[in-house]
Length: 304
Image (cartoon, rainbow, N blue to C red; front, top):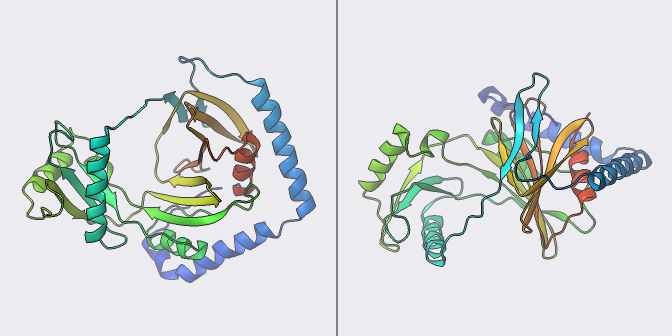
């Protein structure tokens, strides 16, 4: 599926865009079922053959997907196990809990915690007060209004799974994420001099950021205690997927990477046709999607 950019002019015709989203979704849901079943079976059987014939890549053999010009558009790199101390995790949870009370839904804040036990060097983090949408139509409106990647509901879900909720996410612009950038340094100085120090959580400084464009859309699906999510990141350039093992699969002519980090998380990743967006289907081990289910979800999202 190709994700098109949405400019300001298109925001004035939101009903038309919504009608198009719903019409495409209805058409997909109304496909000839015997033909659909045959397609899915074919993809599943192909996936079984591919997956069973490939072995785990050694640490120095990571995957790359290139476009027609030979440019790398997706690759894997070694996984890193991040482990925060219980103290650091507790302080971050306290800070974000406090920010959730102070921010309105849809607001983004840059913050830092002045605490040498938390971090020896001051570091900027961010918190976005997301609006959880329980209905897909409400999420689709957010996609349009916040200029987020427009994602259709998958027409295939593993048995028992239903749409739980979705959110459009905003994050800090790239220039605020790296300590060697002048924008980062300027923001840090501003935070340290801020009068918006909270009383409830000692050492928390924050600033509400005036960003209007979203950087991702996330949809969550649930079957009892089992969950998986579908996330689409916008404007990605040659993204790298951290993994301990990975294989390459092809779905409807599109190359994808099925990867795993240790025994805790698996992902199926691919790029949009225009190479602007990164799609990822993620589960954790207690959800235990089969390889074929990963493939079928992705297959149901690609419109030929």
